[in-house]
Length: 468
Image 1: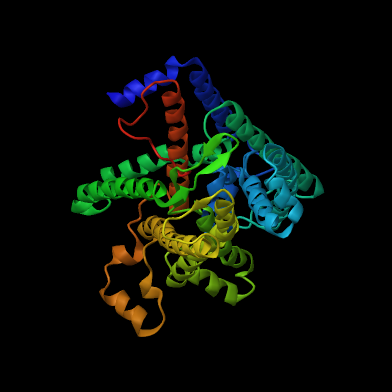
Image 2 (image 1 turned 135 degrees about the vertical axis):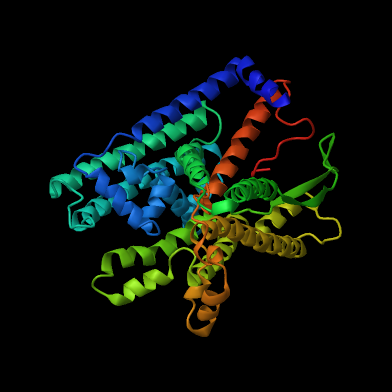
């Protein structure tokens, strides 16, 4: 088979083989560290606490730490502080001209921004670890047991040192993978943490099949579930590689004795230019009501009721989630993509879009196309993120107020309202991460094979990643 031949080719090339083995070795180190517990923690009670607070900030951290936060290992914070620091610095380039200049200085500027990202990651890790330590000391188990064996200043300092060091080590692992391995190191670390739960999900599905959870329709339900999972993954691959190519013509220029330009090229605009950033932003904001309810529901009934309305599958949660994803899709694209600057650069080098005047008209033309693509991309992200959550928790339309909720409660099927009770692997955000990282990594391996005159994973054309 061509796929097996491509895998054999990977190990025939010494440099590519070493890169792949180096990447796998560092990911194995990461997974070993995931089972080293943080001192002074009752890990059993911590797992129960995270299970109860799945929709809160703690559940959000647990997702990106690959389950390390649930076990409260030395890698409990995961790579989340680094992601947050990267996003903050990316946003700050708009406000601070110094960072904007660094971004345009090429390799030297990128190195300085990377160094600032490391410093900010350490600061955020210290703040997050101290906050988590204080929260655990004040929070008890279901029967009032303490989550911490010896609470106090020493526990806070030990937790800060352990978790911050763990995050710094993960950051180093990611950078080593990016530099000496294959693929994006930070993305692969998140990928490895999420995929590590696949055996448990497979076992959960097998147990449901063995116990005939859905009665006589269990077999059919399993088949439909697998087909749906494969279909969604295929849909993600299709959209993530989708582009709108705007033709660009460059006029001929005489430079010395040479004639430059004159060729036709295209400007590729991705359908989902924001990637997984909009769902991450939306999920983190919607986790705040659940977190507030977790700590204040016993004292204030308002937080309990509000927290109930903001759980997975609740109508208000769904409405706000979709709205925020589309909003952040536009927000992020507006930050990273400047049609006016792009149009000016095209005009400077003699480029133009056929049928469109250079300058302002070109900028408006690109902006119109980008607006439509971003809206479609935002709707796609919302759909992919909501389908798994609906399968897990259902669409709780019967929780609507008044006669509308009563009608759904009386006539809508229970599986629609309460979900199928399956572990749809993965959740929406993690599914986007896993498929996107897999596409990027395979595309890099494909490029390495083709560069060395070996056949890649596809017979015709080129495997297109999210970067195009």
